[in-house]
Image (cartoon, rainbow, N blue to C red):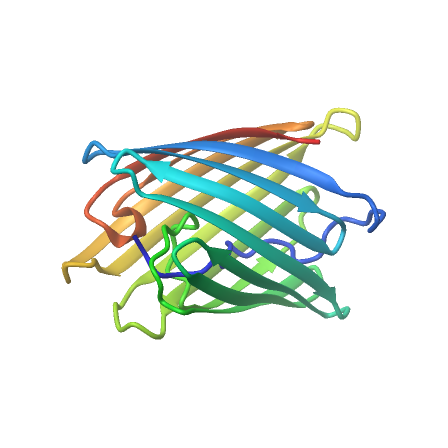
Length: 237
């Protein structure tokens, strides 16, 4: 378990233009398998408009640990400065919040900051979130977005650091919407038993119209000794 908040991997804070009164939903069931024998499942439902998102989720593993969580995001667009403000609560008394911002136009800088009350929380973002994030990104290539960012624990003295390189590429036309996403990351830092580790993670996702699937392999997941496989599949409606 990790005491951290939901500071999602930096992505475009500003949603594509749409009617802000229209609510869209995204349902994501996920399955997790660790090489220490632990199995777990999670289901997450998100509701969003152009500028606001709310979610409700439930996680449970074979050790009988379970946690219910809820969160809210608000996207702010100030032209050359765009930001996402995020807050989350979870059963067991967890509270956390974060801000992630873009500064620039098609090519932009990324700055993020997250804090929690350090109560127990199973971190489903798999990065240290009592942390600072710095990076760059660009949408200057047609149908493609590239981001590179680095985040580090600046509070708990764990020396935990993670670097992500992400490619998002749109395929097809408006009637055949598809997207491919590749996220490769490298991590280093102390585990909960003070062992220093270095590892890698790879996540591949494919979206086709309303449906999507994602698979990931994550060494030292949440800076534990275990390697985790993750499969997610779901739909938007």
